[in-house]
Each structure stands twice: as structure tokens, then as C-alpha cells.
Length: 390
Image (cartoon, rainbow, N blue to C red):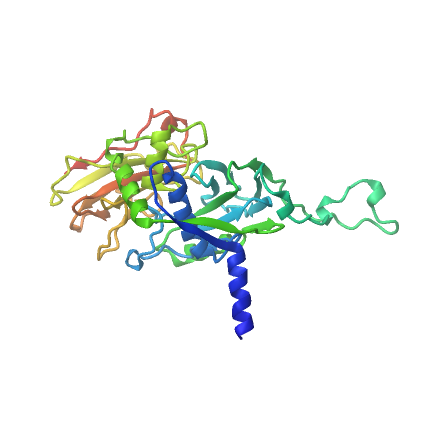
């Protein structure tokens, strides 16, 4: 038994080592915050190169919210990869629901987005140009690599049916050795059957990598990390409601990128999702009733498997527990009025007439998410309806 424990310890050290405690400053904040979130995903998956699946929306009382402004619209699968060996990930057909893979590097810059279709899977290979190739063993040739020419066919008998090949991977390169992938699958948390269907799609995701490598991370001082995070996040209320702060290297303003890391680490670039983070300074009276009217839900310019949602957070950007478990309304869970419109109420108590209601409290703010936004949203010629007071 002692030998087995020792072996496990040695293996753990081989894939996960820690550098000395380091203070976080603004200059190293993006890396520190990303390392911190990589660690949360590492704990979920149980190791480098493994995908960890959140099987259901975590109750707010569980204190497992993960990143700032976590969402209750999707199940997230998280993995950290060492790109000394390239990694190939395949998504199953999405079967008509939102399903995406988002890869980001060790400084919280976008690397790639991937989608499957309702009937076809999709695959991506991520590599690192500066990889230490001596750490990656040679991959033996497989049947899928064979030449399909006549010379390589069997000498006797009919040629067997050709197996269905997986989709040809999209190939991308990362700027850092370590990347993480976030696989998001839309789910109705109130529908047990829908959750099981989403879990089935999670199980159909596959990963191929010749060697998982190892992960060395800095033991960042969390006191300084949280202090820098809070200081940067303090700028968020002064941003325009629609501000693009996540995206690819060279395409995002550096200051806004810092704010994006502090207020919504792992958030998608605008082409995938647009976020309106609203801090309503005039709404200090929580005894009032507020609402958002969506007159024509079907006309919101989002893609076929896209969705919209409204989620309320506290001043630190986390979901705040309430006895009604009322935190979000989205395009699937929202109930319509007799004329087809949707009204979302925000107040500290719920009246019988409130079909869609979210609890508010001192310090509240809210985030509107628009997944798979189309041109009118991206050009800001269409905006989500504003909050009003009843």
C-alpha cells in the first residue's frame, strides 16, 4: 500500500509542480488570474490533459461558482493542456442546441472557437510553435494516415468498406505553452431530461494527445491577486454598456483586456457572445420594481442555436443566494405574455403577476448575454431593451 501511495505522489509531482509564492502586480495580473482559474479547472478535471465536466448547474449555496460572473445557462467542461505535444479535440454534433469550444492562452487571450453542426462533428488541433519536441514522443502511424492509393490496398479479395473518417481538424497555433479549453453546452437546469441530454453530449467529446506533459504554475499570493482584481474591476462601472474586452492578441485594447480578465475571465470574444454588464447607479431603491420588456423575442438577431439571458450579480460579480433560487431568465426558460412578448421583472419580492422574476438586493448589477450575435448586435445598431422602473 505504501508503494502505491508513493507511486501516486511521484506521478502527481511529474504533472503538477509549484513555483514559490509570488506577489501579483498589475503587470503580471493577466497571467496570475489565468493561472488561478487554470487551477480551478485542474481540480475539476483531476489532471493535466483531462476534461472535467460540470454535470449540472451548481447550487449557489455550494460556493462552487468558479469564475467571476459565472453563468447558469450552460454546462461547462474545462481542461488545461501542455502543448509540448499538440492536442486534438473533437466535438459531437450539437443536435440543435448551443455547443462550442473556446480555447484561450495563459494570458487570457483567445486562441480559437469551434462549433459542430446539428448533424456533423467538428475537430480542432492546437499546437505551440515553440514546443520542446523532445518531450513529445513520435506518434505511430494509424489506419487513418494510410495512403488510399491502389498500391496500399489488400492483394486479395474485395476492399473492405472504408471506415468513416473523423472530420479534418482545424489547425491553430497558441502563443503560450499552456492553454485551456472551455466547452459550453446550453442546458435548461429545470428540466432533468434536458440535463441528461447535455451530459450525453459532454461524454461524446474526445481528446487525443501523444503525451499530456506537465504543468508548472506559480503559487500566486491570493491576497495580492484579489486586491489587484478588485482594483481593476472597480473600473467596470465606467465602461460603456457594450464593451468588447475579450478577444485575440492585437485586437483588444490592453486596458479593456485587464478589465475583462477581472470581471469575466474566460468570456467569449464578441463574435461568439456579446455581454452587456449594467451597473445602474440610479437604481438605489431596491424596494422599487424594475423590468425589461422584450416585445418581439423572435426578432433578436442571434444565430439559430444562440440564446439570450439576463443574470443578476452582487457587487463582487458573484451570484448571491436567495431562497427562491432566482438568478437568471433566458430565452428558453422565459414565459411569454398573451401577445408573445416577454417581460423580466427585477425586485426584492415577487408578485403573482410576475411570470419571469429575478431577485435584487443592495449592490446588485446585471449582465445580458447574447450568444451567436449577428451583425446588428455586433455593429451596435440593435441593442437589448433597457431596464425601466414600474
